Length: 595
Image (cartoon, rainbow, N blue to C red):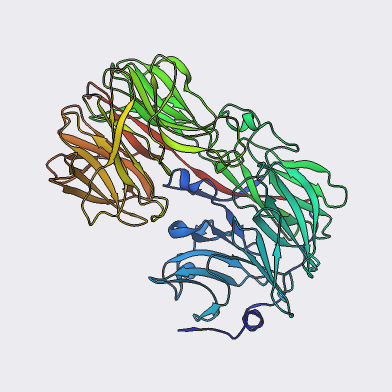
C-alpha cells in the first residue's frame, strides 16, 4: 500500500526525528575497512560509492539495479530491508534520524518512498532528484546531478536557486542555515559555493580539482572544516588529465578551512578516496581499487597469468606475438580522458617478451585497438579533441572510429557520426570494420551496429551503413566477425542484466540466437580461429567469467573459475591461448576518527 502526503513537510514529520550531533575523536594512523564489495561490473562501477547512515550502523551502496544496503556491524547485505514492500529499488538516502528513503522504479515511472512498519509512503521529490534534509529535518533541498539548479523547501515557498555551473554535490551545513554545493565549470574545475536559505550564493573556494562525478560534502561538527575529495590542491594542466601515467591524479580526502580557504590532505593512498561523510566525529569515505589487468590463459584450461597491468580490452596481433590493449586507471578526476592504446610483446606461451608501451596516444579516450588481418593497420575507437580538454564532454570532442598504420604515421578518421562508439572489429579480408554506436535520440546503452567499407591500400573509408538486425533486438553490446567472413556474432542487450548471443550474416539475414545469459556490462565476444566456437563473458556466481559455446548452439561450458571477474576474451591466432581483461573491482567503505 502506498500513500502520498499533501506536502513534503508532512512526510518529514512522519519520518524525521533528530540527527545525532558529531563528537570530536582522535586521529587514527590507518583507516578501518568496514565493507569490501567485489563488483562484477566494469567501467559502470567507477563512480559508485557508499553512503553511511547518520548513526553509522548501515550504508547504501551504488545506484541502479546493483544498489544495495549493508549492515556495518556485520559487513553483510541487508536485502530484505532494502527491498521491503518495493520492487526494483534503484537508489536510496537517509533522513537525519536514519530513516531509509528509497527510489523505486515501475514500468511507467519512478518515485521516492519513505515510510515505517512496512508501509511505502510516496514523497513529493522529483524522481531524478537527490534529496538532502537539514540536520533537524525541518527543511529539504534537492538537486538533479549535472543540472545547474538547487531546490530549497523550507516552511516557506519552494525556492529554486540557479548556480553558475553544474551541481555535482550538495550538503547542509551543521547549523541548518545554509547549503554547500560543489559546482563544476566548463574549464574542468569546481567551486565550493554557499547557498543561504534566502537563495543568495557565495563562492567559498574556487578552482578545485574535484571529480566530474557525484561528490559529497562533509562537515566537522562546528561547521568550520569541510571535507572534500580532490585530485590536488591546485589547478592541473589539462594535458596531465589525458596521460594514463600522470602521477598523483587519484582522489584524496582534503580538509578545507571554510574561513581561510586553505586545504590540507587528510587521507592519501593509491586509488581514489572519495565521497566523504562525517558521523559522530568519524570520517567515512569510499575507496576504489579496480585493479584491471590483461591476462592470458590456455583455451583448454589453466590459470590466467598477467601480461600487462592497468589494461583491458586485449586483442592479438595476426602473428600472435603481441597483444594490443587499452591502458587506463579509471581515475575519477580524469575519467574518459586517461585512456590510450598500448601493446605488449608475448611468446607462444603468453609470457611477456617486451614491456608494455604506447601504441596510440591522443587527447582523449583511445580505446579498443585491433590489428587488420594483414597487420598493416590498427583500428580503434577514439573520443578525442585536437587539443587537451578538461572534461570528457568538453565542446569540440568527437566520438568515432579511427585508423592508423600499425608502424605509426598519420591517423585517419573513418566516421563523423558516432555517439558512445564501441571498439571495432575487422572482417577477415581486411575490407570492412564493424562497430556499434548509440543513437543520439535513442535509448541509452542500446547501441546499433555499423559496417565501414575500407580501401585496404589507403585505409580510407568508402562509406558506412547500418547493419540490419532482427526487429526484436533493440540494441547490442559488442560484435565480432567470423574468421570465415560469412557471419557476424553480436550480443543483444535485452535489459539491465539479460543478454543474448546471436549470429547472422553481414546483411542481417539468417539470424540465430545461440544462448541467453546474464551480464551487467560489456563482456566481449571472440571466435576461435576455426569458427567452430564462440567465447563470451557472462555472470557466474556474481562474477564475470569466460564461457564457450559451439557455433551450432547447445550447452555453453564455463572455461574460467577465477576469484575476480574475467571478460573481453580474445583467442590467439593459433587457437591455443585466450587473452582477457581481469578486473577485481574492490570497493571499500573506510573510516578514521577525526582529531
